[in-house]
Amino acid sequence: MEAAIGIFDSGVGGLTVAKEVFRLLPSEDVVYFGDVGRTPYGGRSKEIIKEFTAQDIAFLVEQNVKLIICACNTASAVAIKELASNYRIPMIDVIRPSAEAAIEKTKSGLIGVIGTSATINSNAYALTIHDIDPKLKVFSLACPLFVPLAEEGYIDKEATFLIARDYLQTMLDVEVDTLILGCTHYPLLKSIIANVMGDKVTLVGCGEEAALATQKILTEQNLLSSKASQQPSPEGAHKFFVSDVPEKFSSVASRFLGQDVTNIARVDISKY
Ligand code: DGL
Image (cartoon, rainbow, N blue to C red; front, side, top):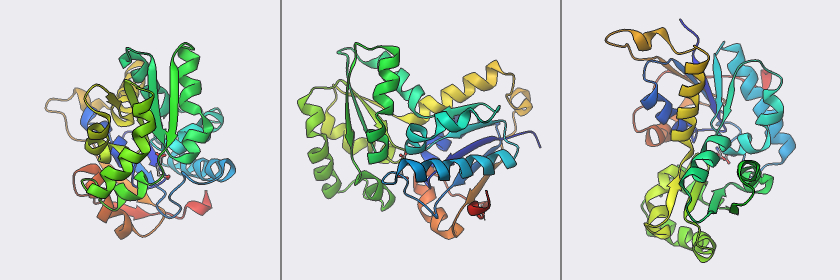
């Protein structure tokens, strides 16, 4: 088997990123690790997030993957920069690609970012955006209730709409024209968020941008699967690993991925 793409997340949310990778790169083999036993990361300290992220990466490296996507915004914001320098394998975080997309899309120069508390406290999005264009204004807001709402399937409920309106009022007040959904779970709430923000605000999700960044690196480094050039191209194999019982993952996973998830194995992440 050729080397696969490795994707990891604090749990099930990274499947919104995996979904875009499967769509854009259908011939690639993918190994996904979801740290469901220790999720969520978003309310934890930097030290713990770094420790967990290092273990997630070590597990994927052991799987001999050719590139790693850190699909978790929280881990991307807090841990990945420091850890990536320990490895030669290319690593993609979900912050930079969506920051670049937001910069491209904004007309007013007013960009909003929503995410977990750890992501927002890290200021990673604003730092990345200002690194590229210091003139842009970035407004950041933690929306911690969105994660449990998405996991519980509250994606079209009145209660979720009311919470979203309450959270996002400050974004409406400052009149952002572009809003980054800086968390794996938020694409599931996209229609509610779009409804609250109105049609003048462009929403930027992380999955599409991370998938495009992956395609670019694999192409540049000549790492695309040879299956992609066969006619017809065979589909890549997808393997899933989790740090708690697979049943807990599979019931929510199909909602995040939009298809049934099979081929799930349990791994003892504390060994890494
Ligand atoms: N995966 C996390 C993120 O994108 C959300 C869930 C968590 O807090 O672990 O920030």
